[in-house]
Length: 116
Image 1 (cartoon, helix red, strand yellow):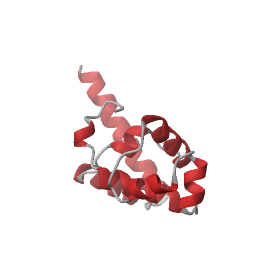
Image 2 (cartoon, one colour):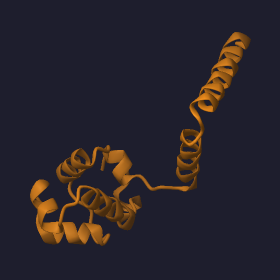
Image 3 (cartoon, one colour):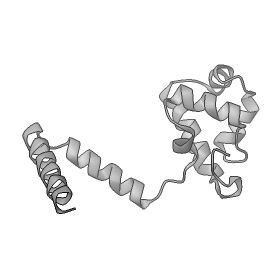
Image 4 (spheres, one colour):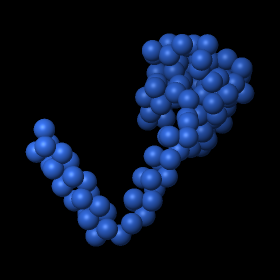
């Protein structure tokens, strides 16, 4: 399924992401199910992590949520959380500090390219 081994997909985590999309859109189970052309009971079972939606439905959910199927189906891990934290920290810096940081990265990248 979208390049993932269906047996290795964490249904509970996918269900939590589906629920998050629904709640971010401020939709009830019934409204959400109608928006993605699915049965209300199916949405409930997905959110509980009992089953996964079909590919066509995953595409509809992702379109509604503004994410890709990979983002919906991949298992979050510590690396993802650390990267998210780093991005949050970076965005919390004043603009001048962000610019200085990016200039250092660009300079290091140029230096590395010149060494090759």
